[in-house]
Image 1: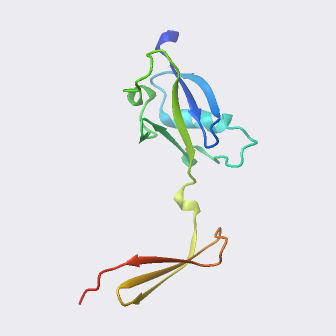
Image 2 (image 1 turned 120 degrees about the vertical axis):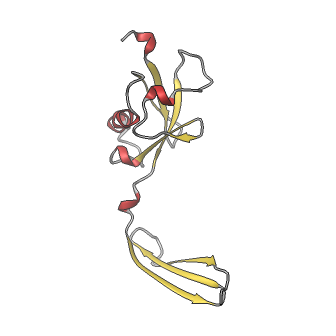
Image 3 (image 1 turned 90 degrees about the vertical axis):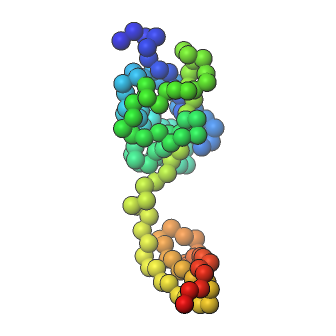
Length: 136
């Protein structure tokens, strides 16, 4: 593939530092790009993705889907045609890993109290108030 057809991407992470730039074929999938980012993620950072599923790529305010290609996600970038494109790489652990140990629902007047106890909370219980209209 001619070098001018390659898309040059770099990825800005939570602390403002960048990973890359790397050159990708327009046929490369977002999932392939994520695998490369995870492999090249700086090991000295406090937040490190465990896998590609823990990573979200954001370009022009949109979260990129794993099955899309770089070429499909490329327009419109608003940058120079051959310039480096900067995307945000956000670490967001998958929801399956966050375990809810106990959920108790208690109704009182027009409020619903939800008590959740999670493993990773600093306090043993978290109380969430949700307004629920009263129905007869």
